[in-house]
Length: 218
Image (tube, rainbow, N blue to C red; front, top):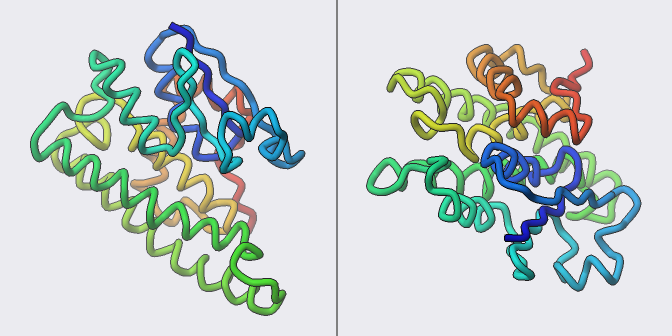
């Protein structure tokens, strides 16, 4: 078995990076330096023509997109219980995962890269300001996921096992601090994120990616 994960520090690739570390299997974490444009190099575009991270390569076959990669890892390592095995519990976990990916994640893109949506500096400023306010509300919804899990007596967001929802919530909350949102305004969410960060495989990935958990500046 030959597994390679192409990742960028602090990007959503953090999520499958954590799952691979938690699995305990041998894999090759390969950094792609987005700020240097390495995602546009011909060698990388041969792996992913969309020039995005993450990419998981398993025995020469590439899988892109975070939801697809994490679903694949869940199937490859069923003993880890990254996602509930079946039924309503699995559906609800995938529901939350899809919402994080199709709503919360792109809202941050509007904060971090407003130039993708307009060439006008004034319009970009409006896009960013509106997205930051929207993101505040979405962090409130992330906190509700945490409090709902706690009310059910679950150790992690999808049940008794660590999984992609937990790593993604950490990533999205960290991005919120980059957007200028104080995580301490969401006490249950922030406490849970710190619990995730202390989980040994997550701690290992944080160290490898050299991440600071809270980048908020008053």
